[in-house]
Structures are given as C-alpha cells and as structure tokens.
Length: 336
Length: 249
Image 1 (cartoon, rainbow over the protein chains, first blue to last red):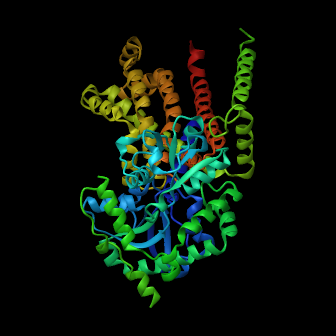
Image 2 (spheres, chains in turn orange, brown):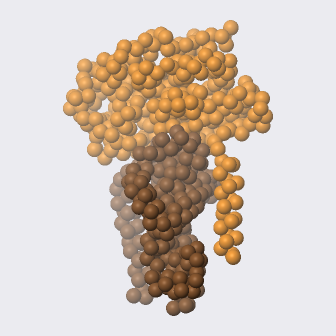
Image 3 (cartoon, chains in turn green, brown):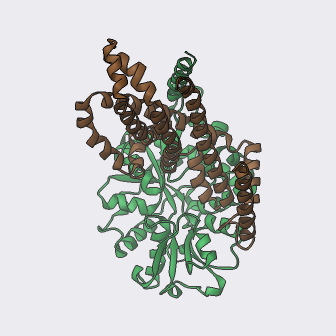
C-alpha cells in the first residue's frame, strides 16, 4: 500500500510540474502586453544580457511588450524558428540570412544588432601567419562547417585570392583554441569574445587577422518574415525602441550588466569575464553609421557586398537583392 | 576479497594522482587538474550556480523515466500477454528504437517547444524500450507449472497476471528499469544540448563556449552522480520488493 501511495504522489507531482514549466518571462499584467518571441542564435549568454534582463530592467515591458527569448544552436536555427512560426524575430547572422533568401524565403532585416564583423583568424606567433596569403597549405580550425567561423574564413581567403581547396579546414568544436595550443591546427577561425577567453586560458602570443579589415559585414541582425513585418508593424517598432534602449543601457552601464549577467546568463559565472565580454559586444554595437543614424542603423550596401561575396564563394547560388530585404522604415518612423 | 573496496579506493587515488601530475604539464583548457575541477564543483554548489540546472535536469529525468517507464511497462505487459499484438507491434517498436534519437532531437524541439516538454519526450523515448523489452521477456518466461496450477485453481487471466506473472517477472523488469534510469540521464542531456537554456546539458554547451573545461568536468561529475543515485535507488527498491519472494524460497 505504501508503494501505491508513493506512485500516486509521483503522478501528482508530474501533473502539476508539467504544466508549470514553460520558458516565458514573467510579467505581472500579461493581458495588457503584446507577446513578442525572439529566436536567439545561442543559449542565453552574457553578450546578449540586455535582451535577458527584462524582468529586472523592464525595457520591453515599459513599451508594452511581453518578451520571450528562445534558445538556438546557431543563426540557422534562429531563422528556422521564425519561419516555422515558433518566434516573431530572429537574432541571426548575415550568413544564415543569405541562405534563407537563397532558398526563396520572404524575410526582412529590421535592425543591425552588431554592425562590426567580430570574426577573426588566430595563429600562434611562431607560425608567422600575418596575412591571409600565409594561410595557403595550412590546417585551419572552425567551430563547425555550418558556422560563421567557416564562412568568414572563406571570405578572408577569397580576399587573398585563395579558395577552400588551398587550405585544410577541420571542425574543432566550440573550444577551438585547445587544438591551436596543442599544435593540431596552424590557425583557428574564431570571434573576438572567443579570443579573449582563449587568452584567459593561457593562449600565448598570437597573430590576429580581423575579417572586418577585409569585409566589414554585420555580425548579427534582427530578421522577421514579410508576413510578420506587415501584420505586426506597431509591435516591431515598439520592440526596436525597447531593444535600442536596452543596448544604450548596456553601453552606458557595462558593470551593472556584468552583475546582472551572473543571474540571467547561463555563462555568466564570473563577473570580471562578463564585463570584458560586454565591453567587446558594446564595441561591436556601434559604427560610423550608428553614430550618424542611431543604434541599429542598417547599411544595405555592406550587406549587399556580403551577399555578392557569398555568391562568388559558391555559398549561395542566386544573385540576392538586399535592397528589397533591408528595411529601415521601422526605425525611421521612430525617429519621426 | 574483503579488502576489495580498499583496493578499489587506492586505485582511484592513484589514477587521480597521475591525472593531477599530467594536468600540471598542460593548459587548463586541454586537461584541468582534478583539484581544480573539485574546487569548481564546490564553488558552484556553494554559490548556488548549479542548483537551478540540477533541479531542471532531475525533473526531466524523473518525468521522462516515469512516462517512458510506465508506457514501456504497460505495453510490455500487453505484448507479453497478447501474441497478436506482439507480432503486430514489435517490428515498428524496434524500428523506432533503431533511429538515432540525437538526430530527431531538433525536430522534437520544434514539435514540443523549448520548455521542459520536449526534453521529457526525448527522455521518455529513450527509457521506453529497455523496460518494454524486459517486461515482455519477463511475462513470457513465467513458470509454466505455476501457470498450470493457477489455471487448475480457477484463476482468471488477470489474476494470473497480477499474482503470478508480474511478481515472478519483477527481477527482470527491474533490471530493465535500472538500464532505463541510467539512459534517462543521457536522454535529458541530449535534449538540453539541442534546445536548452537551463539544465546540466545546456551548461555543458555553455562551458564549451566559455572555454571553461573545469566547469564542463564538474557538470559531468554531477550528471554521473545523478545517474548513480537513480541506479542505487532502484537497486534499493528492488531489494525491498523482492525480499518477501526470496523468503518464500
């Protein structure tokens, strides 16, 4: 009889627990708020702290938005979640945007999150790799074959007149500085935050080639479907206002953001590391364009140049017309 | 033989000492020392950093095990009892189990959302088969002479199942449950790898992004302990359950 009681108790726990746990950000007066879901390219990580702290800071709530952020494993995931209707806005990279457009998907870019290209190629000093031409015949690590690290490496090689067949690209996983330190690869394609963390873990003297010196396409943009764009214009405009406020807050208060990241970001264990990562992301949130036109300003010419390079590299098949995809309308309305 | 636990412990100490020495010669990113892993684990436990992740994964494991186990047990009984059902369903069930769950995980996330449901479904699917298989075998292999005796005493099919087949098959069924319990941890972690922002599996992915190899090892230790606790709980339950039957012998 005791066992029977235990079984019933477990069942009751299950019934109550299953309904209780869904990942929505708690808001006190949900009936008054518009629900917006952002599909992120990653888990809730420190560099996106401004998007994760609404419970505490209320940037989105004060604009009437009940914000939910769902995780993803890469920019492709974020777009997929938007196309399948799981989310309204994708936090994604231009590469994934180009792939979606190449497949004929109807999407629009509404905000430039990081106008600076944060990708780089890192090698140990003794390898003497200082310019893209030096990569010929070398073994280079990338996070994965579908990641931005590979695509940006190809861009860098292309600018030096090299192609994928001139080098050996190997998939090293996200901890890609370990194979570099072990000498298993000659160079590794990474990001600014990855390089900072690698240096913290004992990566010695290195040569760094920044992809932005060759092609400065944005690192991440907000993308929506054309349907969402038409149907939820007001909500998207409010979202952009709120996101811009949150980004400005992170730019002005990196220490507070680093402290909050300890609670809200899955990788926010160390406040000092959080602060450095937030500073790097703050630096990539601004550009000459944003200084003139405000945070989030989109330069369709640069995005077009990126799309053309991707086509030349064979990463996309079709000629993409970014002028039809990029929309600054929501930001212009806000400025008025 | 009485000294075996001591030898086993000494072997662990020796391995840890060798590991500590080897780790001293290379970067923490490549191979962190056991002492560093231990302090990372302690710090995380003290500061509460691990708490929400442990609770999340434990809930997914328990619910997945409850769902998958119950379903495996019930369908196992039906398939053990009804030959027609067994012949009809077995090829499909084997096919469903041969599919690598890791490949299906992203689809489950799309179908069942980013909350706990998708992880529970993946865990349940992983737990289902070992219990189904062991239950079918246990029901089918019950003592024919005892079945004959039940029939002679006028027992119904249901009475024979409840009072003979299930109790007699319990050692086999619980062995299946033990396997399911250990696999449940793997199922939950796979789900969290794909679409998790909370849980120990998500923490492993985050630790790779943070290049925090000691944190990754600390999380793996927590998962191992979780699997072992579940295993031991079922072993304890098994001893309690089987005690009266052993006395009979």
